[in-house]
Image (tube, rainbow, N blue to C red; front, top):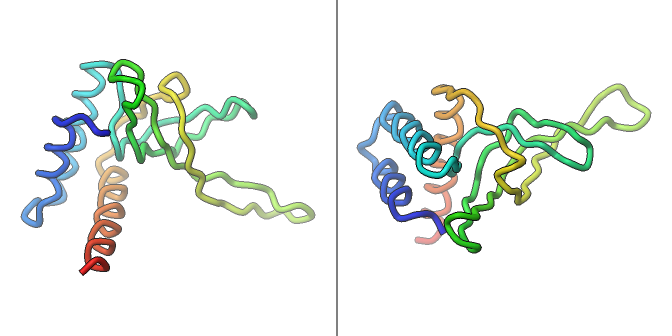
Length: 136
């Protein structure tokens, strides 16, 4: 479902010889290209997400999937973010990860942050390595 240019760049970026700085720079370039080409988003990009039901903005969302089923001019995205729910009868809150699909009109770009991007990329790389080693 990922456009061939993005997939090729991501595959090249995921080689063992690639440094963290190269991975982060490749992600930055993918984000810039997507914004310039069609005002779109790419996997692993940090975004703000507007949850319409509660009229709440989540500043820590991440694109985890790009879907072009409806055509390249009508993408939709799977995002992940942390929602904090207040525990009833308690002053504490519990955070849990939410994944959902959404459209570009509910997403906003955030300033690129190399450290946060590396945190996302390195976490996803660990998951990939773990899942590939379990298939041996």
